[in-house]
Image (cartoon, rainbow, N blue to C red; front, side, top):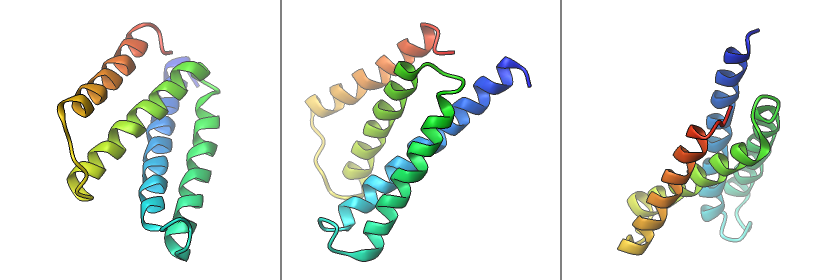
Length: 114
């Protein structure tokens, strides 16, 4: 397998890890402090899948870049879900923070993420 293929697979695994983490975090909101069984199970499962895929991603990507992308895009996605679906507010400072996170992820990738 070529290095380019490994890098693309790494990014695909990383995006899947982010989706699993976002799903787990969203389920955590509905677990009410882990007092509801199924949202709690989904939270644990989401994070387990996310960490397993993140670990696999580290075979083809630097840990700093992978973690920055995982946490940054996950954070941005959770803010979006909270704003659109959960009735959480959005203000200029929050929007600027998310924009800075996304800009940071783009700059990391331009700086040699692979």
